[in-house]
Image (cartoon, rainbow, N blue to C red; front, side, top):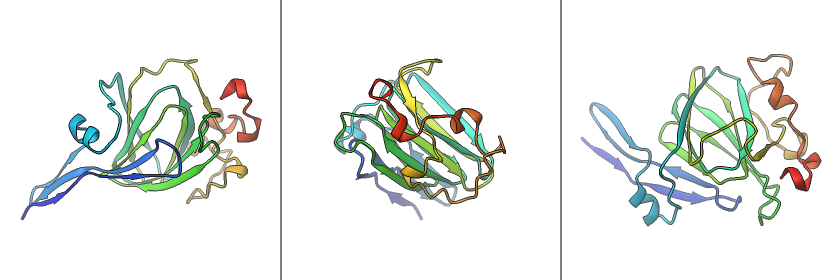
Length: 189
């Protein structure tokens, strides 16, 4: 028997950040997920995101933490295998939701539209979590954007698994040394 799940879009407390359930068709063979269809996104009131200029997949061990990165690009992110706890913080100083943090659990079939300037981070809650990123710009070292420390207590992110800050398999030196939210100057935002 075939089961169809329609595309569903939920707005969040961060302006422009959307949680999306992909259109999915499941039958006896498995599931086909529609990751991106321009016409369906337009009909749901979402911005045009194509063409994608870069697509990355990370594989992260359970407990590994990545982020919070807010490059000058739109991202469409999803988990294609495993599970992740995802966190987003609005780092755009001009945004009405500046400083707002939202979190969600990502599993296959869910995705998040991350606007330019919103910090994106996640912790793998299962081993071998594969996190897919689609970018509307190519990432280059030193590109415009900002990062914020994912362990900043002022953000109040309750990462689900303990993090040993001395363990590089759990958090990178770069992410540990990212500025705290309160230390981000207007020029950095």
